[in-house]
Amino acid sequence: MRIPRMPARPLQSKSEVILRNIVVVCLIAFFITFFFAPILIALIGSFHLWNPLKGQFVFNGLTNWKTAFQSSLFWRSMGNTVYYCVIAVVARVVIGMALASALFSRLTAGKSVFRTLYYLPTITPMIAVAFVWKFMFQPRFGLLNQVLGTQINWLFDSHYAMFAILLLTIWKDFGYAVVILLGGMYALPSDCYEAAEIDGASSWQRFSYITLPLLKPTTFFLIITSLIAYFQNYIPVMVLTEGGPGTITYVASYIIYDQAFVKYNFGYSSAISFILFVIIAVLTLVSFRANGMLEGRKHA
Amino acid sequence: MIRRRVYQGILMLLLAAGCVATTLPFLWMLSSSFKTNVEISALQQRFFPRTLSFQNYRDVFSKLNFLRYFMNSLFYAGALTLITVYTSSVSGFVLSKYRFKGREALFGAIMATMMVPGVVTMIPRYSIMQGLDLIDTYRSLLIPAVFTSFGIFLMRQSCKGIPDEMLEAARIDGANEFYVFHRIVFPMLRNAISSIAIFQFLWAWEDYLWPYLMIRSEDKQVLSVALNMFSGRYSTDYAGLFAATSITIVPVVVCYLVFQRRFIAGISSAAVKG
Image 1 (cartoon, rainbow over the protein chains, first blue to last red):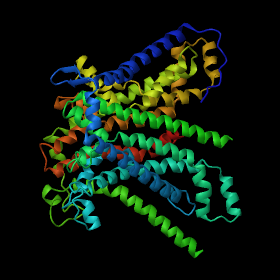
Image 2: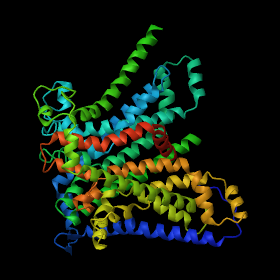
Image 3: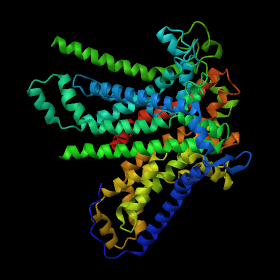
Image 4: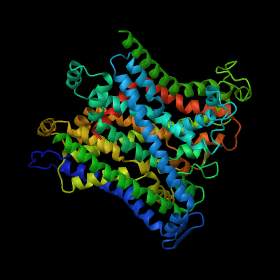
């Protein structure tokens, strides 16, 4: 986005120079200290044997990186991360789209009540909610088995553990998708719908030929922000399963957390965090380009 | 007409199912927080407690000092919210209304930090805080969050909407820039301020890893980290944990229900502008 050129003001007052200098200096100092320097330190640290408890900071070349790429746990957790992200994003978008269109329909009463309640899990603290769900999954007296009438040991059965983590994630976040998509739907031009109705289009046709295509930019925004957030999501894993049973539910960001702050392998953890960083950076850049193409087509 | 009714019925049923799914865990948590440990793990389960017992809350407050953690969280989240609202507004103002060399580069660099995953900067920040000897102080929680790129972005957008003529008029009347920002611009940013305040407060309230790493003394600990106590030392105290999570969640839910319009407007505006 380009800022329209402001008329150049001839005189800069003394107070403007002072205020501007204070803010600019603070911003530069802050972002160097807490973003750019740390990124550099993490990169340098990834080539070191780095353990803060033992006071170790010894250069060890590519060892951390090699260890990561040769570790089956690393590859498993990368695979799990992709699996987790894809399922969580697809579920979020599909459920969000379904409920948003249901709320968008003129047949629906009490729209704002529904919207308010759907958004409720999103605003609550993840860590607290994860603890509540840990007990929802409790096999003997947890709510889930009681409601479903099942006897599944959700968190300790390797078939269900990842599903349980996904369930918590989807439950926590679908409301955000509903609010974003519904906001997008209200912003669509109403004359399209009027014209379609005059032409006798069914509600399914209106959805698939008008709503869905016009909502592409909003959906796209939702998918990308969700992907980036889910790549870094470790709290559900940490609280519910700690990567278990065995190593079934390890995800990349949980390895980073585990290696850094449980095992104090700062160097190894930095190497993995950098791999994650590169993946997220690539995703972001690709999304900006793709978004630009979408926008371009809209104007063409 | 009948088809329409059926269709409407299915629609409402679907929406109602969604509501049950979102609210049931909260209701279960709340009702369990009034049960005893024996009743929670009983073979015969009831949704509502047999007798309404406040014992769990009394225990959590008296034995585990949860009032202290609650106040600590309130202080941390409140202080951080005030700080970031101010720093975001003033940065947004300078980055949108002043023209100077390198402005776009500076803003671009700030925006680029948004895509840096928290885990990458976490380890070096930990070392920096250790080096500055700030571990176990609230300064270690507040200083790394003084500026937020999200807040600066939102405020810069809002400041752009303020007409230059208005600021110019004040300047001609002899106001200096500090007056212009604090007395004219800042009050006009009301909507953006409430959006940022809401998000910042919620983020700080649920912040887990950073306080967990920084705060060592128990009397300085925040609520979200204190919840961990139940999965360690008090591993079987389900009742206590239900009370503790209720204390963490319920105030947020109440605030949300009171200010829900602002919440929804806040996220929608952030999404559309993003």
